[in-house]
Image 1 (cartoon, helix red, strand yellow):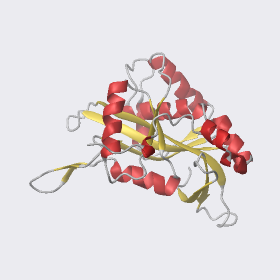
Image 2 (image 1 turned 180 degrees about the vertical axis):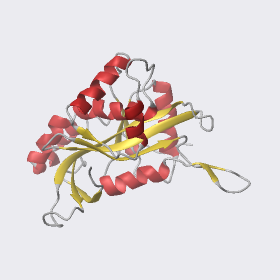
Image 3 (image 1 turned 90 degrees about the horizontal axis):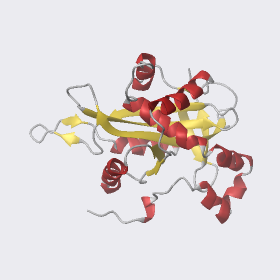
Length: 245
């Protein structure tokens, strides 16, 4: 079991590496407890067996301890839409949107880059919705990862992390439930939570070496050429683009 971070700060100018504090009563509360690569994974809504929400997506924020290379799912949530869907008669929120979640994980984890692995049209449609949601600041980055060669390829990546005991998640989350119930031999597709996790792990694997270099020598990350190298996974950086209606 692990606890949620209580404070964070970037170690370099592009927040490739983040120092995290944890309130566990050990050591000096003013000292960071580790240096982490912070990245997330998203699965935009896919068909769901729930009749109340026939299409459900999932998003999560992970931190990889750069000393132990252990990954932690610090925050996760299912979703149906980017912005709240509200009943016009009562004002009641029917489907909570993603906007508050993105703000929360940026504030507490400095996580603003999320890996995805779906068809381009789906990704662009939902990413555009995020981009146009004025309450989401800063605008997250969404980075496509290499497509998996079928479901068994995706399963193999995920089980490798699990079998090495190199990943942890909260026991009361939907991710834990889905992994526990997952039918390895008969599944036709990953559930949204596992899809998001596998996307995140696919992208994280490409950034570990660069993040370790920053953790070892933070000042080097201020050099422009290294900064560009570290940002290579941010291929859709919309911070510099205007929001369009």
